[in-house]
Amino acid sequence: MNTQTQNIALQSPLKGLWMGVMCLAIGTLNAQELVAPKTDVSAGPLRIGIALPFHAQNTKANPLTDAMMDYYLGLKLGFSELEAEGFQANVSVWDTEPTDSLPLNQLAIANLVKSDNFKDQQIMIGPVYEDNFKALSQHTGLVWKTTPNAWISPMGYVKPSMSKGKGPFPNMNFFINDTLRYKSVAKNVAQMFPKHRICIVIDADKNSKTKGTMYKAMMQKTTTKLVTVHVLKNGVLTPALPKRDSIVLTSCIPDATVRVALEKLLEKRQQCWLIADLGWFEDKRYYTGLNDPLCIYPTVNFTDFHDEQTLAFSRKFFATYGFEPSRFGFIGYDQGKFLGYSCMAFGPGFLSALPDATYEGLINSIHFKSGGTAPYNDGIRFVMIYEDTPHIFTLD
View 1 (tube, rainbow, N blue to C red):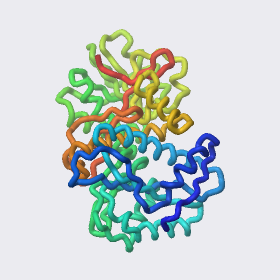
View 2: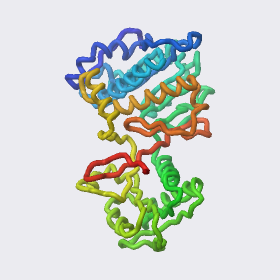
View 3: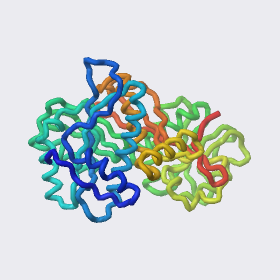
View 4: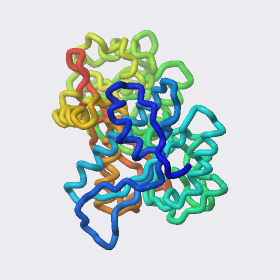
């Protein structure tokens, strides 16, 4: 890749207004400086590299181009808001997928690893595809000038692996695979309800049983309260629920239709909740028309448009770029603010210093599970539905 800018095929007419601006950033090896007052003159601006599949030279309609653009613009907006608080960074942006042609993709990656600028970034974000991530991080021509303190997979879980004697990379995953996510649900439920009796509900399906075993093991690590497993068949639980209030039913059954039967078991009890299976919230057939005071839905990427900060971001994004943000714009913004605050507090090596706390973004809850060489975000959002309108669940 050379230092000449590349055109970006933006499919939205409103996004086309920003083609000239973005062509100054995408595909260039020159850093784009975000001007901010310096708080530490000797440290200098943070060096952040962004390598995403923008498909800059693709002339065909490509939804991925819009998604990557929205993510980048949200990230950039998050960084720019932090300037007033002293954040400063030189941001370099590369396109790992200039066209749909795989040979040209390989050429783009080969040129990236030759770039002195690319090899001297403190924070690296991307690529998105696991194959591209491994091809880049393990390329024989990649010799770091400065090994990144954090190399981030921003949108999909990539299993960390050693890279040229460094790593493992990625050493930060913002999103995780299903197994880790279910463990996160179980841990968070036990933490949210430390005084409740937790009853895990499974059915005869093998996957449901496996999930229930995993839930029980994770919950028993988190709480001292009794955790039991119950099998649902024809609306009846075996063993039966204990005769008490303050019960949390945690479903490990992917079929959302069992919600009605499970809630009937709780309707005459006090302070009881049903925790949905992770997929229920995505299956919108089963929560339209609801006013559901008992069920709590775990999910990711949930935006609460009753939140004033969310509305303010949408208005600012539109005023800045001329179009509404997609969920990728929200994701980029959340990650940008989290990374910016973390670096401002602890420097580029913040991974080893992060506290055991959750950053509540506009669309994601960010909590990095530490204790290993490759922390991952196990934050989960919990949602309730009042009169067909989802809201973030909060304990009073």
